[in-house]
Image (cartoon, rainbow over all chains, first blue to last red; front, side):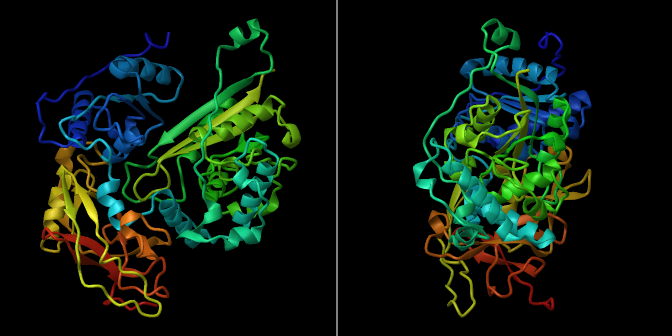
Length: 388
Length: 161
Protein backbone atom coordinates (compact mmCIF):
# COMPACT_ATOMS: atom_id res chain seq x y z
CA UNK A 1 0.00 0.00 0.00
CA UNK A 2 2.78 2.40 0.90
CA UNK A 3 4.38 2.19 -2.54
CA UNK A 4 1.26 2.97 -4.54
CA UNK A 5 0.52 5.88 -2.22
CA UNK A 6 3.78 7.50 -3.25
CA UNK A 7 4.41 9.69 -6.30
CA UNK A 8 7.59 10.64 -8.17
CA UNK A 9 6.97 14.30 -9.02
CA UNK A 10 10.17 15.30 -10.83
CA UNK A 11 13.45 14.01 -12.19
CA UNK A 12 16.76 15.67 -12.95
CA UNK A 13 20.00 14.60 -14.58
CA UNK A 14 23.34 16.03 -15.61
CA UNK A 15 25.10 15.18 -18.85
CA UNK A 16 27.09 11.96 -18.71
CA UNK A 17 30.80 12.48 -19.46
CA UNK A 18 33.83 10.23 -19.33
CA UNK A 19 35.59 12.58 -16.96
CA UNK A 20 33.75 15.40 -15.28
CA UNK A 21 35.51 18.66 -14.55
CA UNK A 22 33.01 19.23 -11.78
CA UNK A 23 33.19 18.03 -8.23
CA UNK A 24 30.63 15.43 -7.19
CA UNK A 25 29.06 17.91 -4.79
CA UNK A 26 28.66 20.41 -7.63
CA UNK A 27 26.79 17.75 -9.58
CA UNK A 28 24.64 17.15 -6.48
CA UNK A 29 23.93 20.86 -6.32
CA UNK A 30 22.84 20.94 -9.96
CA UNK A 31 20.41 18.09 -9.38
CA UNK A 32 19.03 19.71 -6.24
CA UNK A 33 18.57 23.12 -7.86
CA UNK A 34 16.94 21.59 -10.91
CA UNK A 35 14.41 19.61 -8.84
CA UNK A 36 13.56 22.68 -6.77
CA UNK A 37 13.13 24.82 -9.90
CA UNK A 38 10.93 22.23 -11.61
CA UNK A 39 8.57 21.73 -8.69
CA UNK A 40 8.55 24.99 -6.79
CA UNK A 41 9.37 22.99 -3.68
CA UNK A 42 11.32 25.08 -1.15
CA UNK A 43 14.70 23.90 0.13
CA UNK A 44 13.39 23.72 3.71
CA UNK A 45 10.47 21.51 2.66
CA UNK A 46 12.79 18.65 1.78
CA UNK A 47 12.84 16.48 4.90
CA UNK A 48 14.16 13.19 3.51
CA UNK A 49 17.46 12.28 1.80
CA UNK A 50 17.88 8.83 0.26
CA UNK A 51 21.11 8.04 -1.56
CA UNK A 52 22.42 5.02 -3.37
CA UNK A 53 25.22 3.13 -1.69
CA UNK A 54 26.58 2.27 -5.12
CA UNK A 55 28.99 5.19 -5.19
CA UNK A 56 32.69 4.80 -5.75
CA UNK A 57 33.28 8.37 -4.69
CA UNK A 58 31.54 7.81 -1.38
CA UNK A 59 32.63 4.21 -0.84
CA UNK A 60 35.28 4.93 1.75
CA UNK A 61 33.09 7.30 3.72
CA UNK A 62 30.67 5.58 6.09
CA UNK A 63 28.99 8.95 6.63
CA UNK A 64 28.44 9.63 2.94
CA UNK A 65 24.73 10.49 2.97
CA UNK A 66 25.11 12.65 6.07
CA UNK A 67 28.16 14.42 4.64
CA UNK A 68 26.14 15.21 1.53
CA UNK A 69 23.34 16.62 3.68
CA UNK A 70 25.82 18.97 5.34
CA UNK A 71 27.41 20.02 2.05
CA UNK A 72 24.03 20.90 0.53
CA UNK A 73 22.55 22.38 3.71
CA UNK A 74 19.75 19.82 3.96
CA UNK A 75 18.13 19.41 7.40
CA UNK A 76 16.18 16.15 7.17
CA UNK A 77 14.08 13.85 9.32
CA UNK A 78 14.97 10.79 7.28
CA UNK A 79 18.45 10.02 5.94
CA UNK A 80 19.29 6.77 4.25
CA UNK A 81 21.89 5.17 2.03
CA UNK A 82 20.62 2.13 0.22
CA UNK A 83 23.20 -0.63 0.00
CA UNK A 84 21.88 -3.13 -2.51
CA UNK A 85 24.33 -2.50 -5.30
CA UNK A 86 22.70 -2.01 -8.69
CA UNK A 87 19.28 -2.32 -7.09
CA UNK A 88 19.91 0.76 -4.96
CA UNK A 89 18.09 3.27 -7.20
CA UNK A 90 14.88 1.26 -7.37
CA UNK A 91 15.33 0.30 -3.76
CA UNK A 92 15.59 3.97 -2.87
CA UNK A 93 12.15 4.61 -4.38
CA UNK A 94 10.63 1.81 -2.31
CA UNK A 95 12.34 2.94 0.88
CA UNK A 96 11.38 6.56 0.36
CA UNK A 97 7.77 5.48 -0.13
CA UNK A 98 7.92 3.37 3.03
CA UNK A 99 9.45 6.24 5.00
CA UNK A 100 6.75 8.62 3.79
CA UNK A 101 4.06 6.06 4.60
CA UNK A 102 5.49 5.64 8.09
CA UNK A 103 5.53 9.39 8.64
CA UNK A 104 9.31 9.68 8.91
CA UNK A 105 9.38 12.31 6.18
CA UNK A 106 7.05 13.88 3.64
CA UNK A 107 9.24 15.10 0.76
CA UNK A 108 12.24 12.89 -0.02
CA UNK A 109 15.19 13.86 -2.22
CA UNK A 110 16.55 10.77 -3.96
CA UNK A 111 20.11 11.46 -5.09
CA UNK A 112 22.21 9.19 -7.27
CA UNK A 113 25.62 10.63 -8.09
CA UNK A 114 29.10 9.29 -8.61
CA UNK A 115 32.37 10.44 -10.15
CA UNK A 116 34.48 7.27 -10.41
CA UNK A 117 36.98 9.07 -12.65
CA UNK A 118 38.03 11.05 -9.58
CA UNK A 119 40.07 8.87 -7.28
CA UNK A 120 38.92 10.42 -4.05
CA UNK A 121 36.89 7.63 -2.58
CA UNK A 122 38.61 7.35 0.78
CA UNK A 123 38.33 10.90 1.98
CA UNK A 124 35.81 13.00 0.06
CA UNK A 125 34.06 15.19 2.59
CA UNK A 126 34.78 18.49 4.27
CA UNK A 127 37.19 17.15 6.88
CA UNK A 128 40.33 16.79 4.76
CA UNK A 129 40.05 20.38 3.62
CA UNK A 130 38.45 22.21 6.54
CA UNK A 131 39.07 20.48 9.88
CA UNK A 132 42.00 18.03 9.51
CA UNK A 133 43.91 21.10 8.34
CA UNK A 134 43.63 22.54 11.84
CA UNK A 135 44.26 19.28 13.71
CA UNK A 136 40.69 18.92 14.94
CA UNK A 137 40.90 15.57 16.70
CA UNK A 138 37.77 13.84 15.37
CA UNK A 139 34.96 13.28 17.87
CA UNK A 140 36.93 14.21 21.04
CA UNK A 141 37.94 17.51 19.46
CA UNK A 142 34.41 18.31 18.34
CA UNK A 143 32.89 17.37 21.69
CA UNK A 144 35.57 19.44 23.39
CA UNK A 145 34.35 22.49 21.46
CA UNK A 146 30.76 21.63 22.29
CA UNK A 147 31.40 21.07 26.00
CA UNK A 148 33.45 24.27 26.32
CA UNK A 149 30.66 26.27 24.71
CA UNK A 150 28.05 24.67 26.98
CA UNK A 151 30.14 25.53 30.03
CA UNK A 152 30.37 29.13 28.83
CA UNK A 153 26.62 29.48 28.30
CA UNK A 154 25.30 27.62 31.33
CA UNK A 155 28.18 26.67 33.60
CA UNK A 156 29.15 23.06 34.08
CA UNK A 157 29.60 21.05 37.27
CA UNK A 158 32.11 18.41 36.22
CA UNK A 159 31.33 16.34 39.31
CA UNK A 160 27.87 15.75 37.87
CA UNK A 161 29.42 14.42 34.67
CA UNK A 162 31.52 12.25 36.97
CA UNK A 163 28.34 10.95 38.58
CA UNK A 164 27.15 9.80 35.15
CA UNK A 165 30.47 8.07 34.48
CA UNK A 166 30.38 6.28 37.84
CA UNK A 167 26.72 5.25 37.47
CA UNK A 168 27.38 3.67 34.09
CA UNK A 169 30.57 2.01 35.31
CA UNK A 170 28.67 0.44 38.22
CA UNK A 171 26.23 -1.00 35.70
CA UNK A 172 29.06 -2.45 33.62
CA UNK A 173 30.32 -4.22 36.76
CA UNK A 174 27.01 -6.12 36.73
CA UNK A 175 27.23 -6.88 32.99
CA UNK A 176 29.18 -10.05 32.27
CA UNK A 177 29.20 -9.18 28.57
CA UNK A 178 30.91 -5.83 29.13
CA UNK A 179 34.55 -5.48 28.11
CA UNK A 180 36.65 -6.85 31.02
CA UNK A 181 39.17 -4.04 30.68
CA UNK A 182 36.42 -1.60 31.68
CA UNK A 183 34.91 -3.66 34.53
CA UNK A 184 36.86 -1.90 37.25
CA UNK A 185 35.18 0.44 39.74
CA UNK A 186 35.81 4.17 39.32
CA UNK A 187 35.10 7.19 41.51
CA UNK A 188 34.13 10.76 40.66
CA UNK A 189 37.71 11.71 41.56
CA UNK A 190 39.02 9.16 39.04
CA UNK A 191 36.85 10.80 36.42
CA UNK A 192 37.99 14.32 37.28
CA UNK A 193 41.64 13.29 37.36
CA UNK A 194 41.67 11.25 34.16
CA UNK A 195 44.01 12.73 31.61
CA UNK A 196 42.91 15.40 29.17
CA UNK A 197 42.40 14.33 25.58
CA UNK A 198 40.89 17.46 24.04
CA UNK A 199 40.27 19.77 26.99
CA UNK A 200 37.74 19.84 28.49
CA UNK A 201 37.22 16.23 27.28
CA UNK A 202 38.92 13.71 29.57
CA UNK A 203 39.82 10.09 28.97
CA UNK A 204 36.85 8.87 31.06
CA UNK A 205 34.51 10.97 28.91
CA UNK A 206 35.31 8.84 25.88
CA UNK A 207 34.28 5.51 24.42
CA UNK A 208 36.81 2.78 23.75
CA UNK A 209 36.32 1.04 20.39
CA UNK A 210 35.89 -2.71 20.96
CA UNK A 211 35.02 -5.82 18.98
CA UNK A 212 31.66 -7.57 19.27
CA UNK A 213 28.33 -8.16 17.60
CA UNK A 214 24.62 -8.01 18.36
CA UNK A 215 21.44 -8.76 16.46
CA UNK A 216 17.65 -8.58 16.55
CA UNK A 217 14.94 -10.56 14.80
CA UNK A 218 11.89 -8.55 13.72
CA UNK A 219 8.56 -9.75 12.29
CA UNK A 220 4.92 -8.68 12.34
CA UNK A 221 3.10 -8.89 15.66
CA UNK A 222 0.62 -11.28 14.04
CA UNK A 223 3.44 -13.54 12.96
CA UNK A 224 4.96 -13.43 16.45
CA UNK A 225 1.62 -14.33 17.99
CA UNK A 226 1.09 -17.22 15.58
CA UNK A 227 4.48 -18.58 16.60
CA UNK A 228 3.79 -18.23 20.29
CA UNK A 229 6.56 -15.64 20.72
CA UNK A 230 4.75 -13.71 23.43
CA UNK A 231 7.75 -12.19 25.21
CA UNK A 232 8.54 -9.58 22.62
CA UNK A 233 9.21 -5.86 22.47
CA UNK A 234 7.19 -3.45 20.38
CA UNK A 235 8.64 -0.28 18.82
CA UNK A 236 6.06 2.36 19.75
CA UNK A 237 7.53 5.43 18.18
CA UNK A 238 10.58 6.48 16.21
CA UNK A 239 11.94 9.71 14.78
CA UNK A 240 15.30 10.97 13.59
CA UNK A 241 16.88 14.19 12.42
CA UNK A 242 20.00 14.65 10.28
CA UNK A 243 21.90 17.94 10.02
CA UNK A 244 19.56 19.79 12.39
CA UNK A 245 19.44 23.49 11.42
CA UNK A 246 21.97 22.68 8.69
CA UNK A 247 20.31 25.28 6.49
CA UNK A 248 21.39 28.07 8.85
CA UNK A 249 24.73 29.78 9.19
CA UNK A 250 24.78 30.41 12.94
CA UNK A 251 23.14 28.19 15.53
CA UNK A 252 23.24 27.57 19.27
CA UNK A 253 25.29 24.36 19.25
CA UNK A 254 23.89 23.19 22.60
CA UNK A 255 20.68 22.23 20.78
CA UNK A 256 20.57 19.02 18.79
CA UNK A 257 18.12 17.21 16.54
CA UNK A 258 17.05 15.20 19.58
CA UNK A 259 14.72 18.05 20.46
CA UNK A 260 12.58 17.50 17.35
CA UNK A 261 13.17 13.75 17.08
CA UNK A 262 12.23 13.29 20.74
CA UNK A 263 9.00 15.25 20.41
CA UNK A 264 7.98 13.25 17.37
CA UNK A 265 8.98 9.83 18.67
CA UNK A 266 7.19 10.35 21.98
CA UNK A 267 4.10 11.68 20.23
CA UNK A 268 4.05 8.64 17.95
CA UNK A 269 4.40 6.44 21.02
CA UNK A 270 1.59 8.20 22.87
CA UNK A 271 4.01 9.08 25.67
CA UNK A 272 5.47 12.13 27.34
CA UNK A 273 9.03 12.40 28.60
CA UNK A 274 7.73 12.00 32.16
CA UNK A 275 6.48 8.51 31.26
CA UNK A 276 9.96 7.19 30.41
CA UNK A 277 10.68 4.22 32.69
CA UNK A 278 14.31 3.64 31.73
CA UNK A 279 16.63 5.66 29.51
CA UNK A 280 19.28 4.24 27.20
CA UNK A 281 20.90 7.22 25.46
CA UNK A 282 23.74 7.00 23.00
CA UNK A 283 26.87 7.84 24.98
CA UNK A 284 29.92 8.44 22.82
CA UNK A 285 30.86 11.12 25.36
CA UNK A 286 29.54 11.77 28.87
CA UNK A 287 28.41 15.30 28.00
CA UNK A 288 26.19 13.82 25.27
CA UNK A 289 24.05 12.15 27.95
CA UNK A 290 23.49 15.43 29.75
CA UNK A 291 22.71 17.30 26.52
CA UNK A 292 20.13 14.65 25.70
CA UNK A 293 18.45 15.08 29.10
CA UNK A 294 18.00 18.72 28.12
CA UNK A 295 17.16 18.35 24.45
CA UNK A 296 14.60 15.62 25.10
CA UNK A 297 12.97 17.65 27.83
CA UNK A 298 13.77 15.62 30.96
CA UNK A 299 14.77 19.03 32.30
CA UNK A 300 15.06 22.60 31.09
CA UNK A 301 17.85 23.77 28.81
CA UNK A 302 20.94 24.53 30.84
CA UNK A 303 19.60 22.56 33.83
CA UNK A 304 21.26 19.24 33.06
CA UNK A 305 23.67 19.28 36.01
CA UNK A 306 20.87 19.99 38.45
CA UNK A 307 18.84 17.17 36.92
CA UNK A 308 21.71 14.72 37.38
CA UNK A 309 22.12 15.88 40.98
CA UNK A 310 18.42 15.46 41.74
CA UNK A 311 17.89 12.01 40.25
CA UNK A 312 18.99 8.45 41.00
CA UNK A 313 20.12 7.08 37.65
CA UNK A 314 21.19 3.63 38.87
CA UNK A 315 19.20 0.56 37.80
CA UNK A 316 17.34 0.67 41.13
CA UNK A 317 16.75 4.43 40.88
CA UNK A 318 13.88 6.55 39.63
CA UNK A 319 15.34 6.84 36.11
CA UNK A 320 17.62 3.92 35.28
CA UNK A 321 20.34 5.02 32.82
CA UNK A 322 22.19 2.73 30.39
CA UNK A 323 21.83 -0.26 32.70
CA UNK A 324 24.37 -2.35 30.78
CA UNK A 325 27.07 0.27 31.33
CA UNK A 326 26.49 2.27 28.18
CA UNK A 327 28.99 2.36 25.35
CA UNK A 328 31.51 4.17 27.53
CA UNK A 329 31.70 1.50 30.23
CA UNK A 330 30.75 -1.66 28.33
CA UNK A 331 32.83 -0.87 25.25
CA UNK A 332 31.82 0.61 21.90
CA UNK A 333 31.31 -2.49 19.79
CA UNK A 334 28.70 -3.90 17.41
CA UNK A 335 27.97 -0.66 15.58
CA UNK A 336 27.23 0.93 18.96
CA UNK A 337 24.02 -1.09 19.29
CA UNK A 338 24.42 -2.23 22.89
CA UNK A 339 22.17 0.38 24.47
CA UNK A 340 19.33 -0.77 22.20
CA UNK A 341 20.00 -4.43 23.01
CA UNK A 342 20.08 -3.62 26.73
CA UNK A 343 16.69 -1.89 26.52
CA UNK A 344 15.16 -4.92 24.79
CA UNK A 345 16.71 -7.24 27.37
CA UNK A 346 15.29 -5.18 30.24
CA UNK A 347 11.79 -5.06 28.73
CA UNK A 348 11.87 -8.83 28.29
CA UNK A 349 12.65 -9.06 32.00
CA UNK A 350 16.03 -10.64 31.38
CA UNK A 351 18.19 -8.00 33.11
CA UNK A 352 19.34 -10.46 35.79
CA UNK A 353 21.32 -8.76 38.56
CA UNK A 354 20.62 -5.37 37.04
CA UNK A 355 16.94 -5.85 36.15
CA UNK A 356 14.97 -2.60 36.40
CA UNK A 357 11.65 -2.69 38.24
CA UNK A 358 9.63 -0.54 35.86
CA UNK A 359 9.42 -2.25 32.48
CA UNK A 360 6.47 -0.34 31.06
CA UNK A 361 8.72 1.15 28.42
CA UNK A 362 12.27 2.21 27.54
CA UNK A 363 13.66 5.09 25.52
CA UNK A 364 16.72 4.49 23.30
CA UNK A 365 18.61 7.12 21.30
CA UNK A 366 21.32 7.36 18.68
CA UNK A 367 23.94 9.92 17.74
CA UNK A 368 25.46 9.64 14.29
CA UNK A 369 28.46 11.50 12.87
CA UNK A 370 29.66 15.05 13.39
CA UNK A 371 28.93 17.98 11.11
CA UNK A 372 30.97 21.16 10.73
CA UNK A 373 31.04 23.30 13.85
CA UNK A 374 27.62 22.32 15.16
CA UNK A 375 26.51 19.71 17.70
CA UNK A 376 26.21 16.32 16.06
CA UNK A 377 24.89 15.34 12.66
CA UNK A 378 22.20 12.74 13.25
CA UNK A 379 19.88 12.24 16.23
CA UNK A 380 17.46 9.35 16.65
CA UNK A 381 14.91 8.42 19.31
CA UNK A 382 13.12 5.07 19.68
CA UNK A 383 10.42 4.29 22.26
CA UNK A 384 9.94 0.62 23.11
CA UNK A 385 7.41 -1.26 25.21
CA UNK A 386 6.91 -4.91 26.10
CA UNK A 387 4.20 -6.87 24.33
CA UNK A 388 0.87 -6.60 26.18
CA UNK B 1 41.53 17.83 -6.35
CA UNK B 2 44.95 19.06 -5.42
CA UNK B 3 47.09 18.53 -2.37
CA UNK B 4 49.20 21.22 -0.82
CA UNK B 5 52.09 20.23 1.38
CA UNK B 6 52.28 22.95 3.91
CA UNK B 7 54.69 25.14 5.13
CA UNK B 8 57.78 25.71 7.08
CA UNK B 9 57.29 29.12 8.62
CA UNK B 10 59.67 30.16 11.39
CA UNK B 11 58.87 28.65 14.76
CA UNK B 12 58.15 30.98 17.62
CA UNK B 13 59.91 30.09 20.83
CA UNK B 14 57.43 28.88 23.43
CA UNK B 15 57.45 31.14 26.46
CA UNK B 16 55.83 30.72 29.89
CA UNK B 17 52.12 30.38 29.17
CA UNK B 18 52.58 30.19 25.44
CA UNK B 19 50.63 27.57 23.54
CA UNK B 20 51.94 25.74 20.52
CA UNK B 21 51.52 27.88 17.44
CA UNK B 22 51.37 24.79 15.21
CA UNK B 23 53.06 26.90 12.55
CA UNK B 24 55.65 24.25 11.74
CA UNK B 25 53.15 21.42 11.38
CA UNK B 26 53.42 19.69 8.00
CA UNK B 27 49.84 20.03 6.86
CA UNK B 28 48.53 18.03 3.94
CA UNK B 29 45.48 19.92 2.74
CA UNK B 30 43.27 18.30 0.13
CA UNK B 31 41.46 20.90 -1.93
CA UNK B 32 38.43 20.41 -4.07
CA UNK B 33 36.97 22.26 -7.04
CA UNK B 34 34.43 24.74 -5.85
CA UNK B 35 36.52 26.07 -2.96
CA UNK B 36 39.14 27.35 -5.42
CA UNK B 37 38.14 31.06 -5.15
CA UNK B 38 38.70 30.83 -1.38
CA UNK B 39 42.22 29.49 -1.76
CA UNK B 40 43.13 31.82 -4.63
CA UNK B 41 42.14 34.85 -2.55
CA UNK B 42 44.46 33.72 0.24
CA UNK B 43 47.40 34.36 -2.10
CA UNK B 44 46.80 38.04 -1.40
CA UNK B 45 45.89 37.32 2.23
CA UNK B 46 42.26 38.09 1.55
CA UNK B 47 39.52 36.22 3.32
CA UNK B 48 36.57 35.61 1.01
CA UNK B 49 33.41 33.90 2.19
CA UNK B 50 30.40 32.65 0.24
CA UNK B 51 27.42 35.01 0.35
CA UNK B 52 23.85 34.16 -0.59
CA UNK B 53 22.32 37.06 -2.54
CA UNK B 54 18.79 35.74 -2.15
CA UNK B 55 18.85 35.69 1.65
CA UNK B 56 21.66 38.12 2.49
CA UNK B 57 23.51 35.53 4.58
CA UNK B 58 27.03 34.10 4.58
CA UNK B 59 28.06 30.45 4.79
CA UNK B 60 31.25 28.54 5.55
CA UNK B 61 32.78 26.04 4.68
CA UNK B 62 32.39 26.57 0.89
CA UNK B 63 29.46 24.71 -0.66
CA UNK B 64 28.36 24.06 -4.24
CA UNK B 65 24.97 25.67 -3.51
CA UNK B 66 23.49 28.16 -1.08
CA UNK B 67 22.56 26.22 2.05
CA UNK B 68 19.64 28.66 2.35
CA UNK B 69 18.07 28.19 -1.08
CA UNK B 70 19.71 25.13 -2.64
CA UNK B 71 20.75 27.15 -5.71
CA UNK B 72 24.25 27.70 -7.06
CA UNK B 73 23.12 30.87 -8.83
CA UNK B 74 22.44 32.64 -5.53
CA UNK B 75 26.08 32.44 -4.44
CA UNK B 76 28.88 34.97 -4.72
CA UNK B 77 32.20 35.46 -2.92
CA UNK B 78 32.68 38.49 -0.71
CA UNK B 79 35.77 39.69 1.06
CA UNK B 80 35.26 40.03 4.81
CA UNK B 81 37.25 41.80 7.52
CA UNK B 82 38.63 38.73 9.27
CA UNK B 83 37.67 40.11 12.66
CA UNK B 84 35.71 38.06 15.11
CA UNK B 85 35.66 36.47 18.52
CA UNK B 86 36.20 33.03 19.98
CA UNK B 87 32.95 31.03 20.07
CA UNK B 88 34.50 27.94 21.64
CA UNK B 89 37.89 26.25 21.89
CA UNK B 90 39.51 22.99 22.83
CA UNK B 91 43.06 22.32 23.95
CA UNK B 92 44.20 19.23 22.12
CA UNK B 93 46.47 17.00 24.20
CA UNK B 94 46.65 14.15 21.73
CA UNK B 95 46.72 15.52 18.22
CA UNK B 96 46.05 14.05 14.82
CA UNK B 97 49.05 12.37 13.17
CA UNK B 98 50.38 15.54 11.51
CA UNK B 99 50.10 17.47 14.78
CA UNK B 100 51.76 14.85 17.01
CA UNK B 101 54.45 16.45 19.12
CA UNK B 102 52.84 19.90 18.90
CA UNK B 103 50.40 19.36 21.77
CA UNK B 104 48.79 21.06 23.47
CA UNK B 105 47.44 23.23 20.67
CA UNK B 106 44.26 25.22 20.30
CA UNK B 107 41.47 24.34 17.92
CA UNK B 108 38.79 26.99 18.09
CA UNK B 109 35.53 28.00 16.56
CA UNK B 110 35.66 31.69 15.69
CA UNK B 111 32.54 33.74 14.96
CA UNK B 112 33.34 36.22 12.18
CA UNK B 113 31.77 39.67 12.35
CA UNK B 114 29.57 38.68 9.39
CA UNK B 115 27.89 36.09 11.58
CA UNK B 116 29.32 32.71 10.64
CA UNK B 117 31.55 30.25 12.45
CA UNK B 118 34.88 28.93 11.20
CA UNK B 119 37.06 26.18 12.71
CA UNK B 120 40.69 27.31 12.98
CA UNK B 121 43.83 27.36 15.09
CA UNK B 122 44.42 30.31 17.40
CA UNK B 123 48.09 31.26 17.57
CA UNK B 124 50.28 33.88 19.23
CA UNK B 125 48.11 33.38 22.28
CA UNK B 126 48.91 32.70 25.92
CA UNK B 127 46.95 30.10 27.85
CA UNK B 128 45.77 32.79 30.26
CA UNK B 129 44.38 34.91 27.42
CA UNK B 130 42.34 32.15 25.91
CA UNK B 131 38.62 32.54 26.59
CA UNK B 132 35.29 32.48 24.84
CA UNK B 133 34.53 35.99 23.66
CA UNK B 134 38.19 36.93 23.09
CA UNK B 135 38.41 39.33 20.11
CA UNK B 136 40.59 37.80 17.40
CA UNK B 137 41.73 38.72 13.93
CA UNK B 138 42.77 36.71 10.91
CA UNK B 139 46.44 36.12 10.27
CA UNK B 140 48.06 34.03 7.58
CA UNK B 141 50.43 31.09 7.52
CA UNK B 142 52.34 30.83 4.22
CA UNK B 143 52.01 27.56 2.32
CA UNK B 144 54.53 26.33 -0.22
CA UNK B 145 52.34 26.92 -3.28
CA UNK B 146 51.92 30.63 -2.52
CA UNK B 147 48.51 30.32 -0.93
CA UNK B 148 48.08 31.09 2.76
CA UNK B 149 46.34 29.25 5.57
CA UNK B 150 43.77 31.17 7.60
CA UNK B 151 44.72 31.35 11.27
CA UNK B 152 43.57 33.65 14.07
CA UNK B 153 45.42 35.60 16.76
CA UNK B 154 44.27 37.89 19.56
CA UNK B 155 43.08 41.18 18.09
CA UNK B 156 45.73 43.74 19.01
CA UNK B 157 43.47 46.66 18.08
CA UNK B 158 40.80 45.74 20.59
CA UNK B 159 41.44 46.33 24.26
CA UNK B 160 41.10 42.97 25.96
CA UNK B 161 39.48 42.86 29.32
